[in-house]
Amino acid sequence: MKKTALNPIVAMLLASSTLVFSQFALAHAHLKTPVPANKAVIDSSPQNLTLTFTEDVEPAFSGVEVLNAQNQPMAVEKAKLNDKQHDQLIVPISKPLPSGHYQVNWHVLSVDGHKTKGSYAFSVK
View: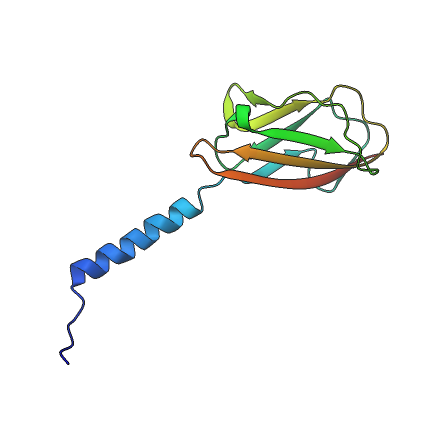
C-alpha cells in the first residue's frame, strides 16, 4: 500500500477553513452587560432595562419578559433598539416594580441570523 503525504497547500486550506468555521460558530449575540446587573440589589424600580449584547440584534425578532418571584409577568413595553447602539435593547417598564426578586428572560436574533436566549435576575429593595 502506497502512503501519500498530505499536500501542504491542502493542509493549510483545511486548517484555515476550520478557523473560519469556528469564528462563525462563535458569532452569536450573547448578553454582555445588563442594567440592572445580574444579581444586583437596587434601591428602587428601574424605569427601563438596558441589555447590551456582543453583536448587533434585530429588534423585530427579539424580546424580553420580566417575571416576579411568583413567576408572574410584569408589565413591560416592547424592547426597542437603541438608535445609536444597535447591540443594545432598551425595555421600558410600564409600572414601577415593587420590592422583590425578578427574573429577566430574553431572546434575540443577531443581524447574522443566529438566535440566542438567556436569563438573569435582580432584586428591588
